[in-house]
Amino acid sequence: MIVAPKIRGFICTTAHPTGCAKHVAEQIAVVKSRGPIANGPKKVLVVGASTGYGLSSRIAAAFGSGAATMGVFFEKPGEPERCGTAGWYNSAAFETEAKAAGLYARSFNGDAFSDAMKATVIEAIKADLGQVDCVIYSLASPRRTHPKSGEVFKSVLKPIGSASYTNKNLNTGNGVVNEVTIEPANEDEIAQTVAVMGGEDWEMWIDALQSAGVLAEGVQTVAYSYIGPEVTWPIYKNGTIGRAKEDLERVQRVLDGKLASLKGKAWVSVNKALVTQASSAIPVVPLYISLLYKAMKAEGSHEDCIEQMDRLFRERLYNGNPQPDEAGRIRVDDWEMKPALQELVGKRWAEVNTENLAQLGDFEGYQTSFLRLFGFGLDGVDYNAEVDVSIGVPSLA
Image (cartoon, rainbow, N blue to C red):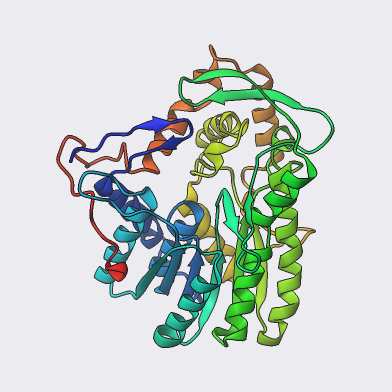
């Protein structure tokens, strides 16, 4: 079938297999162009491996360090007349590229929050790899079924406090700068968001892996977070999602203690604001990203997911110089948060409106990045040609 983008709200409901494969190939090329990652990981598990930072982590480990990788995700395969998800096509392309490079790659599709998935992955590690020396935790889900109680939790993106929150916002469908008002979360919504997006499942994964003896000595595990500038804090850092990230940092400290016997280390990496399927859903953030992209591209410091993850592995995790901040977090958002850059973005935030968005921001770049997530707008892809949407992920065949 011929596949075109169909956008509904902040989601594209179609994905292009060939375009997704091209996007993966471009990320691989970035990593390979930078040469091998010295002392990098060799057996890596990525939980949440099919899109965004998780996918880029898998690519950086495999093609930068020659690592054998296992990836866990929850994606939908295509059918003869219906597209699969972008994450499915990304994973199919990654495995194809890994096999061509002689690299081990195995994927697992299902509920990463479940005990059954953890048990399945552990048995595969025992059978194929013996142990893993790096565990990346990069899940971004709107809901979670607790593996013990069976309770279903749903996350919300809301401020915390007694008053509603109003700020500028970008309608990504039509490029209009408007205002958004969000009512504050109640205590149950806060707790549910922490249950979905906090650190409990990360800890459950590490506990299960450690109990099974499949964590290698010196293992490192990393979960991803974001802090951002003050303009986004009410909806992010000081909102429900920020409360969940605080729990992630709590678990990082707990895991440090648990991994001490293996001489291992847990990290929270604070990454740059980027267009991902997760960030597109957060009010206020798309406008900030548009302004940020304009400023960072102008000074030559813009990075996408793959450049961020390559830098994390190459310059922080595996070169003996992680450069943690005062809270013990790795900061690869350091270029984004430079005071002079943030001062410029803050000035433009005060000035931006629909009429001057093209001058002050990079909405075109935002849209391009968004479509690329789903395999659209990549050079060298014939989007008028028929394409097989029912391709499979080799290790899941």
